[in-house]
Length: 155
Length: 155
DNA sequence: CCGATGACGGTATATTATAACATCGGGTGA
DNA sequence: TCACCCGATGTTATAATATACCGTCATCGG
Image (cartoon, rainbow over the protein chains, first blue to last red):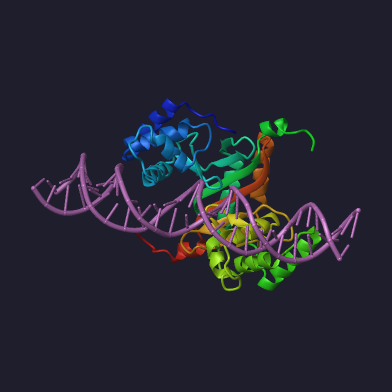
C-alpha cells in the first residue's frame, strides 16, 4: 500500500518528461525547489526551502519559493500537507491520483498511501451529495507502527 | 448523510452539560468563543473571532482566542479546517466521531458529513499499516451541488 | 519590430500562531 | 485563617506562514 520513493535523479527525470509533455516549463528555480523538496528526509516548510535555496540562489525571497511550489503542486510533482504547513515530494507523479498521508507526530515521518478503499468511499460520498472535489485533503495524524513499538511500554 | 445543525442555544446547553460531565470548565471566554464560532454562517478565522470578541471583551489578544479554541477543539465542540485555517462548530458534539468536510470554494459553504464508508476505509488502511490515528483530517475542496448548478453553463 | 504572455526579482505587508511571563482567583489542606 | 497550588487569564512581543503588488526581462507568434 505504501509506495516506495524513487531516487532523486529518477524523480527529476520524470518531472522533466512530464513537463515537456504538458508544454509547461520546468525552469531552473522550479527544478531546484523540486530537488530540495524531494531530497529532504520528510516534509519541509516553505521557509526551510528558502534557507536551503540560499546556497544556490543569490538572495531568494518568499515569493520565489511560493511560486515554484505553486507550480509544482499544480503539476502534481509535490503535495502540500495542510496540517503541517509543509510540502513533500510526490511518490508517484506519473499519474494523477488522490493520495492520503499518514503523519507520525513522534518521528515526523510521513507515508503517502494510495488506498482504493478510501478513494472509493470518498467518491461515493461525493455521488451522494453531488459535491465535486477538486482537491482532496486526507491526512491522518497519529503514531506510526515503528514509533508505537519504540514508545515507552507503560506509563 | 449531512447533519442538521442545532440551534445556538441547544449547542451551548449541550456544551455546558458535556463539560460538567467531564469535569472541565466552560468559562465565560470559552463559552463566548464557542458562541461566536457556532453563530457564524460558515467557518471563521481566529482573528475574525478576535474582532467579534472585541464587542464583549475589553481588549482581547490572540492568545485569548487561541486558548479558547484549543480547549473547544480538545472537547470536540468545534473542528479546525486545516485547509482554510478556520474553525467551525461541531454538528453533533455529543459523541466522539471522525468527521469529513466538504468545502465549497465558490460559496464558502462547508458541510460536515460522517460517512461510515469513509471511516471504515480509513480504519482499514490503519490496520494494514499499523498506524494509529489521533486526529483524522479529511477535507474535500471543490464545488457543492448548488454552486455547480448556479455556475456559468458554458465556458 | 510589436505585443502578449509567462517567469522572475524585490519590497512590503498581511495573516496565522505561539513564546514567555505576570497575575488572578478559587479550592484544598494545615 | 492562611499558605499554597493550579488552572485560567492578561499582556507584550515575536515567530512562522503566505500574499499583494509592481517593475523587468525573455520568449514566442504575428
